[in-house]
Image (cartoon, rainbow over all chains, first blue to last red; front, side, top):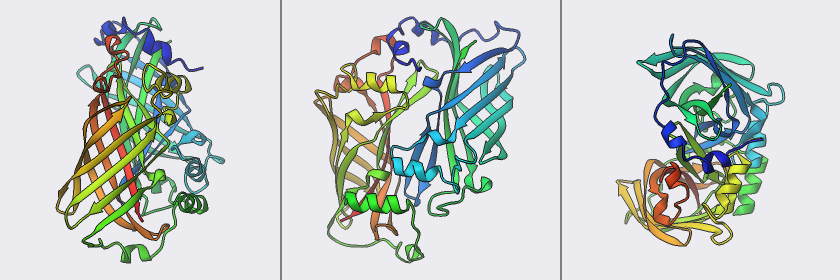
Length: 196
Length: 200
């Protein structure tokens, strides 16, 4: 069950939490479970060189481990490819077919990373491996923003941010519609993790 | 037109003809041409920052509208209506809150509308659309800035399609949507608009 409402409603004390939570308080790895209500993967692809078609994956799960004292981290993200949602059911069904997401044969896509790059205290890049249609390739997710806060409702620390990455769908054989629908796929990842 | 779109989409979302490239040259009519918005390639997505941490997105799935263009005179008109209850964030509980009285109040205000008769051109390219957004019964000025714009011959519809990507940032309180401002929910809402329209 997803609980977005209370986090909006009972948010007053979280104002204080918008100040970055002290970064050096934990000297060991801390595990955060991704919050499904504030974690989603959206992809963007250019349609006939004219406009950007978007769709999101509703079912994304995983967790993140952060060790701030050593500036290391690990991330595992699992995406149910069949949960793709563009706002057009017939397009979603087309996306799930064998020459695009191949959801029947490959019900999940994965992003696994153990190379977190920090600049000062700020996370700037997560380098990992992206697996789609059963094929893996290196992928970097660049942090557009990253912050931690004490969540007032959950009474737990929450860390998260916005991340962006790009890959060529032809590199994993998702070739239908090329070149009229672009090869380059931009991933927009919203992620928030709740400390276990 | 709805049937045409549904049939074409259901048969094959993309059908590609070699004729496409041959037909891609821009047409140069000195007249006003009407284009019907293609609902499968027209979406308004909103983005709001969540506690300074990550970006929450949602989109409206039901919309309709039309555009007229007079390229010689470099003029355009746009009329887009959005069904506010069709909001989709991927989180059902959040959608329920959004359609309620705190936000879009869809029972009292089932639609939002953007109209414009002021297109800004740079050569043949639409660069911006100055218009009026009506939301929650209030109207206010909004300028959509184009990050890309193009016209092409669509091989499915066998018609010219014009469209692009547009964006703007509004302050929701200007339309009376003030819920949660005192709780740290931002006033600023970024709107990201995909639009394609089919020549009639």
